[in-house]
Length: 489
Figure 1 (tube, rainbow, N blue to C red):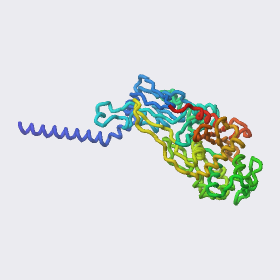
Figure 2 (tube, one colour):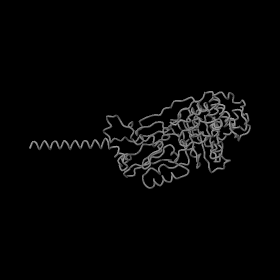
Figure 3 (cartoon, rainbow, N blue to C red):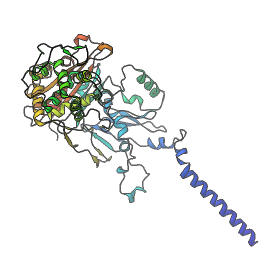
């Protein structure tokens, strides 16, 4: 009898050991396989069992959550969806997340460990903290002014506070309503197919994910390089610049649309955008110093984030002298996002210093307690302060005397630079209209806003496209919205 009990005991121990081994195998080694299985809906069900945190603009939520009563219970909603889509992105039960909904997903979904209380108390809850909130830097008046200014045209606007790097506006048109993608039914699937098949690409954030030839707006960078290098010492001295200009090592002539560009001073060439002067200046400065100037402003930076990723703006450094000449007037392989060109204008406005732009002011718990705060990023000096002062003078002249008169604002000093960027095979495409600018109210101690606008107006006649005529009025509206905003608090 004792022997049978011992055998039964050994058999039970063996069964228990096998059970423990099997549990350990499943939990430790097979868990990723089962957890990642497409048929496992438990993570999705848990994710949507509580409302998502809010994204705030100007202290007001521009997102919400709707209780559907279904298995995936809470669905994302958006207020003024098309207006803020380039900022929020979408949070879809079928297609995931983009932009702030993606980069701040841990806070918004409640899965970020920083949202939980002290470690001792974490075990008493259900393991999921309520979703936190994301407070953006966006100025709602500036955002709306940019959106309305672009209207139905294809284009983008980026606006920055020069002294801090805070992004005040980020608009891309045409846009879309992210609410269309929030659910998991046939309506969301149909909207996804329609939006992805739209040749206007409404889900593309042109302000940070599309690069364009910057055209004459890049002449701000070339002028900074020439002044810093001492190639130009006096804004009013004639330059040695033929008109037309024979591109070095080629039989190709570069012409101007403006008059009186032969041997023009830097001031005249900047005001009236003489291609020949800046192409030759770029060659005289040399590829090494042009590269250093461009990269100082942020070109060729592949790691930029605001916090979501930004397409790198590019200045080609493997060029011959003819290609360098074209690169120096914003053509050839030079490409920039509107955000990058807003940084260029901001550096001029801020005494030659540029701060990395950012979109999130702070994140908070659902009860308002701060989780993290951005603070002002460190500044880097991209040109000498004396050079920045000269460029501010030149940009102000563009508005008062040159091609940027449509950006003038009563009661403020405005600096700008127009651009009409050629593109396409043989430059046959409808040009892009650019305008970059900054503005300082007469009662302000420092410039309050720097703006970049690009318009791809494919419906307009080629001769009707110009940075000063098409893009400058949009920039003016954005700058006025910031300058006339009530003081914080």
